[in-house]
Image (cartoon, rainbow over all chains, first blue to last red; front, top):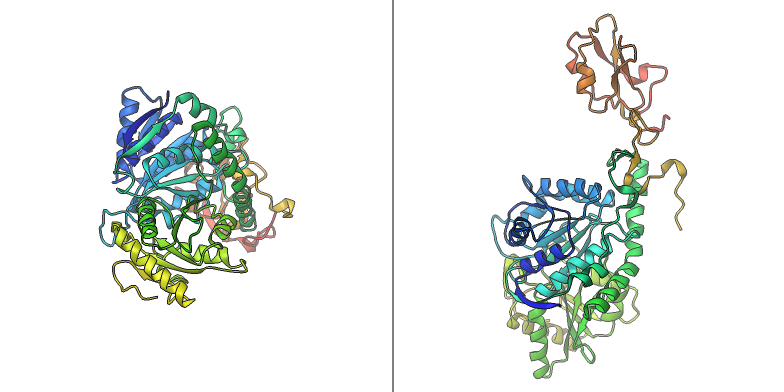
Length: 399
Length: 108
């Protein structure tokens, strides 16, 4: 029987990884993600999980270990946070190039300027162009579910790509919430054992992994990954559909809408701060502001069509950025760039702007969302946005 | 859809069959600017080149009388020249040889 537990995001992730019956885990400590590895180490030590638990010498080693283990046919799990994520940067592209469905948990942590424990999405977002699947969880429950969904997508023969399964550090990773733990039989039905196909390292049929290719073959390798990402939306829809059926959940594959039926302004957001945004939307509606929320579940592959269809319905869209791209075209974060590009071919586009919020692990409060709503409301009234980026808590609400 | 020329094809995940010795894909001999040249008179079969070559491009011949160079895969890193214990190996400019390969052209 499914049971309900109160778990932090990290503990929920560990439970999911255990139920996914991973073969090889490679750890290296850095907070906040490290709590997941503490849980998994305990499970292996107590015999609840039959997996190789390897301590890496660092994050680069962690990714190298799971790279090799996955090539040998193992279902693998690793993870990191903040500068740990960027320390392993070199290994991400070879893993996706080798088409190995490694899974890495990221519990976000601000990159060092020069030292900050808080959560910020820049660590993971800096890796978004490495050919990995990437998406955020809003709650420990969604974190649990996303691990299973991502293994299923990544290991699909049409995909065969690694996955970053992200959750906000602290806000999700360390705040306990209710998590429905399903039956093992349900997980087994949803997630069959990993079949590496012809990939597998086998002494009887020796293969070479990671040989050099010529420069004129580079474009071909890139094309193969690009095509896998083109196939992926279909695979994601199937996987999420099966997940909803087997576990009784109601996930939308790509974008989730909350109180948007008659909404004029919406927050476009990914990750843990969506939880606060929901309450802000409710309170704004009590005051007569027609606000709503659109939550992004995958940033890679970016659901261009679904985002365009969803956002085209509204008058004003405020993209909540929790990552930085200094000097980028929107002068703030990464998501508004994607959102505006997705909307470019829509005949009647909404007004769009972005809010830098939650950087360095700063809390994004209800007040911050009210301030964003004021800017969006003023913009809709004026028929134009004043600028493409506003910094929460650091400037006045003038559109 | 896309039209990938046969000679540029890459196997899935870049995983290639690996029989012992060499295989027809992913040849790297066209990386060379210099190649190592052996003087068999000087060579005492110390095997340094065989041990140090990162791509196994020096092998002991079947009759075990000399070391043999693999021109298809040698990248011209010249580690062997550096490690040779009897100055039997010297570097020579690739294009001075009639069969010299032009860097990164398709020679094979």
